[in-house]
Image (cartoon, rainbow, N blue to C red):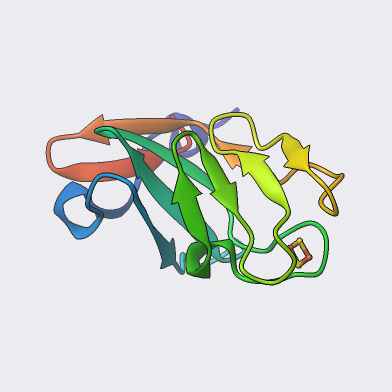
Length: 107
Ligand code: FES
């Protein structure tokens, strides 16, 4: 692995995402991402729902889960695991670190 791959990559500021909310972030070279603030901890998943490609960042954060706005499928935000049908396949998650006031992935 190159040094670049181990370097945390800033994707947004922590102040952009209030606790209990989610925001879509577009990062060059990656699919659209959903960045979550769950009680002050940050998590990142792919933004596209694994069921029908709805934007999860337009869904509803319910505790530690995100509910898809289209059909009500749910995912565990930390693991990406589908927790409620019709969502059955997981969504990808990313390793997250906070460096200063920035949310970073790929540590
Ligand atoms: S598109 Fe997300 S549950 Fe159907």
